[in-house]
Length: 141
Image (cartoon, rainbow, N blue to C red; front, side, top):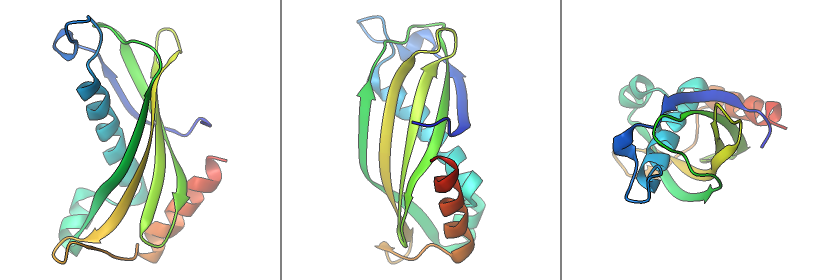
């Protein structure tokens, strides 16, 4: 993945770790989710925008690769990038790195659909948001 933009920084706490002593998969997903909301905000898809316009985002696919263990006390940074922007669909990626070692701990690629939250059906992204998505996709190349 190219650098993307910094969408999350955080730490691994002892309660994030499982019986193997490393961060449990549920916390990778949680940290990636926080990065997702920061990405959406950069695109103009804020909570306030979605509430005011009766819109939402629905995840339809997520693929995660776990590469290196993270332990309690590690700090992480997630960088995000738009991979593809279609009329109703956004594909994006996150890369989580251990900030001390620089090693990639995990990556994920997600596909989300823009929805009318009342009808619960896919709808078109507004032109200004789609433009931002396309600009971010070009910047990630």
